[in-house]
Length: 130
Image (cartoon, rainbow, N blue to C red):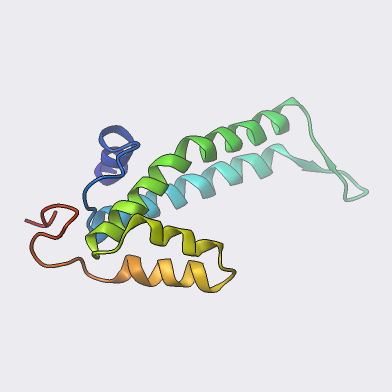
């Protein structure tokens, strides 16, 4: 949880510097767990009628709004963390634009986030492991 709070509180919109693999993947894990829990709450608020049509009441709309706010609040820190992770591997944050290439782009970013960071200092700052 400390890695999640570090990103959300200390580095909310920080696109400078470097981020370790552990910081990136721990944040991603906690974000995924929170998203799954929120979606479970959202789907439990939606009820299926006999006609298999989704009927929503005020609670259904409220949870959909809550999910939307959750995603908006986490967009900038997730983007900033990914850019800092790319910096750790010696790549520019502009490499993130490759996600707009269907299928291949997300795979490339995934591979870049798995690669170990540069040893020592690079042009984006000192090694965060030290």
